[in-house]
Image: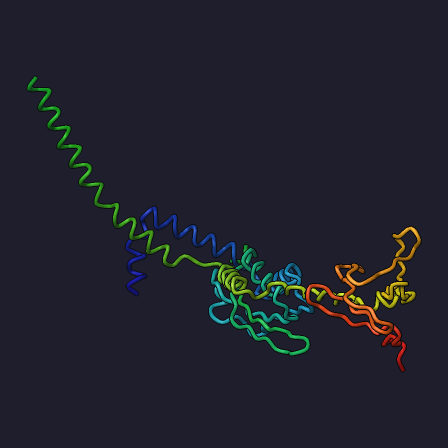
Length: 139
Length: 154
């Protein structure tokens, strides 16, 4: 509340407006901007699959959490996370390469959890979150 | 002259007052920018990339060093000697010499007596009708020349 009041107090300040604009631009660039959440989910799966391929992960498969995004997904202009699950063969070199390509990715992917299993053929399961920006539908 | 001094005094006072009025806003502006930066969005991949760098620094993901195969043991000088030996001959003086094949020699043969160098620094230390003893820098190899080689033993 205090932060909001402070923001409102300086809303006319040019430096604050510029900073706010830059941050909004970052959110816009790093998010999946779609009018449809279904399209955004498909786009997120394709993006993670492309990153896995780029990193050289073996036997990679990506699935998206079927549950609707938590929060105000229905609110146009709102940002909500899309949860994805990546399964792939675990090998240190490709795993570290995947972390690097995540850094260079267009969309901001955050890691929720990583689980490594298997002995003879180790695999890992990574839960990721991608921001979905619900674009205002054009009339 | 007095008029000029009065103008200078007014100019100085005016400049000071203007600076006083405008200078006060600088510090709050910096605070506002700092506050705005505190809520700057962070790319999720930056965190993952940093974690990857730390793991790499700890040695994870480094390619395993290929194990260099141990060099084969040096060949047994006895095998060469048995292979090269053609005869043990007693010379008129009673001394024994070993006649070996030596393709570098003009006759293709060479006689080795006590103290002669066979090859690779191995020197003949003793010769008997049954055994030839070779030495090299403290190593001693006694070769029973009429004993069947190990590879042909049953």
